[in-house]
Length: 192
Image 1 (tube, rainbow, N blue to C red):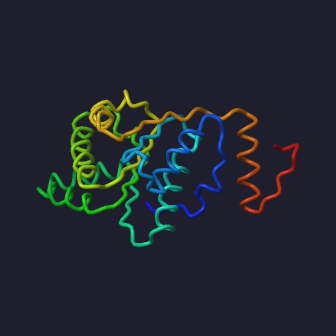
Image 2: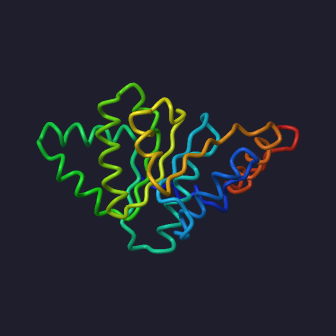
């Protein structure tokens, strides 16, 4: 998965329901000492989770182009681990992830209902965090719905899980207006 260059912090419309997540992601991207080393974002579709993940990635790369960063969907991660398990290369795969500086994982909810996979990925992510890798992930599910993954991660020091609430109609209009202006489109006020 590639970083979307249009998903940046300056193009993110901060709504009341996403303000806390925006601040935490900004701090994570700036590598502030007080920032969590693990951030989990969750909420309904369209609340800005993916935009914030890409914003982190774009900001980190802009600040330090040599950063070893990977952006994966949970499905890609799961498929990689299944292949590695079948090929008896699980330790090798874990070592590769521990070499990263930042790991971004989207669509974590895909792992819901797969406790064995969640447990395996949780062990790998914990190992990554212990090696100094910073991790940000996002999904539609609440942490309780991916319990085998989120429970061990939430218990780690310096981790934070943040729910993002759906934007109001007024906020949706601001988002649409901002996106259309950024893309060079003129949407009449009546249409908004």
